[in-house]
Length: 363
Image (cartoon, rainbow, N blue to C red):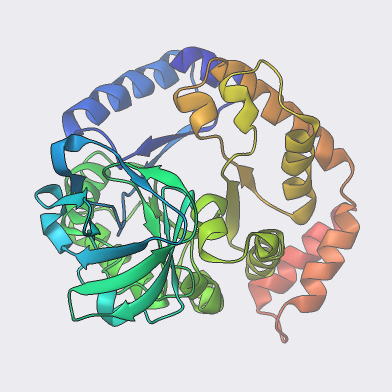
């Protein structure tokens, strides 16, 4: 399958460190590099960090609990103990745990907690103490264990690199000379500096940093983040949970434009050809989504589930490549050049002036 993906046009492979062991990832990396050598390909590899995720805790008997609209719920900030804590629902109360230890000092009444990709919404009613809060469930849904959580509009007080991430960055990414690292939930320029130092301390000076913009804080500090990073990823999945979904397209266009002007590469990701997880062809809306990202000025488009566990991985790569190639026909490169040149800070450096002149002469 790796060979088929490379033949179909894949030019970078993403290793998702939210799952799997170092041993398992190394086995795939070695097979991937052998395929590249056999095919004389210079395709790259990327480590995607797990990042500071917030998860729901375990449940008694490992049994899902039914949450009902307008019911009260107690949420306990159990921190690292979330794999030991067991939530429950009985005739007296419903109580669940979250892995974010500073939950009660970060949120306030009126904030919303989105669970399981937003399929469960809880409104914060009252902060009971530094560990517990009372909430109201806004919809009917079953809750399972280890479900992801988002806190829209809340700056999460968790380091951009957890202990696991530091181990992954230093003892895998740097050690095995991976080309890129995609850092999850980057919120400030200081986060980028920490990632750079963590890489450099382990000999990873050659690894480029891609900052995933996934929450409101990342958008607020986007200019500072762009200045410090090598590239940006518009991670639309979590971003769509953290900001109003109708603003995701605006955020995407804003980030891409800022990266183009700054001369930093930008990747657009999440659900680009999602239906191809099961179907041999994408929807027309998905094809247009990929093309619009190219029209916006993105430098790369990324597949996730379509190739990780989809039924038609090589077809997804081939179709995405064909869409991007055809979309580029519709780009007026002179207009793009003039736009970027007009928005570039003046006076330009000698290097910028020389390069700009060379590009202008090519039209």
